[in-house]
Length: 415
Image (cartoon, rainbow, N blue to C red; front, side, top):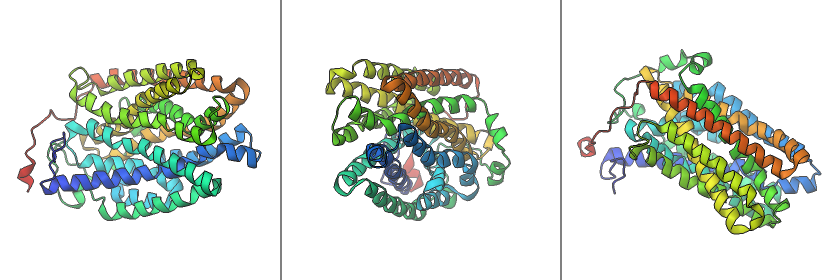
């Protein structure tokens, strides 16, 4: 078996890459089994506990605020202590410690693959967030209908803890094994240099702020849909409770496809090669158009709902792994900084601020302006996100590139 990255399973390097990629994919996907139940059980909380939409929104904040803040504060830990340890411990402890999972996963997976295929690698790897969301929603719906809404939080916790142990056992980085990966930038950074970068120094890295703002807008919209779409489908479009829960995953089904495809498009098509942020901006704009069409065709039935929700997911989620993965990792590794996890943590942490703000904001908007107000809010925020990404693409085009030109890898030399 040979991957499009030139990695073969017939040699030790290829086997290591597959193990790390697979364990990392499954481990991070499992975290969504903890995040998705709250969106599924909102209707139960509203009826059984007499909670208002504003109170339900504050529950989103309670779940996601620690994740966002601690990711900004603790992102550099993976650079200092190693991605395997911080990823594994984060999974075992969960809650605020889960903030370490994404920066650590991106640092570790990216360290195993040539620089010129990272958009493709992270595009495929990013499907774990959306596939995990589908699995997490399906599991939560089943537990909710079979055993009650409280049970939707217990079993996922045990699953995530077990995945953390697997990461600690099998998620080694090349520097832990004294392996040099062909096709990586030649500079060898020191671990001490990462700790010298303050948050202010990280924010001064060109285009990091614009990328962070773009991700902030897109993640705000994504979590609005994660947390409120089942309730919208139930109350506004008259789906049943099970139908609303399962149909809401169509956004994530589109996300799986969009995430997998966007990296290959950016790496392979001549028009986008060397312009990853321009292509990402176009994808963000496509998400705004799809959301508008979803709102306008909402009363027209299942086929229209499915089509435009799928497209909105593909365009929105496709941007995520580029903005929170390959781009910040490249910026963090430029000039031998060894700050990949720090920059990924900073970008994804700022982006995740939107995930805990959306709860109370959407709660108020849905109460005052109705469900249509919620969707128009998401459309405006998506447009703002695409503008930020296009601005970042202009800055990116003016920067010297640290990623080497594509090379032909003969992996059999490593046997």
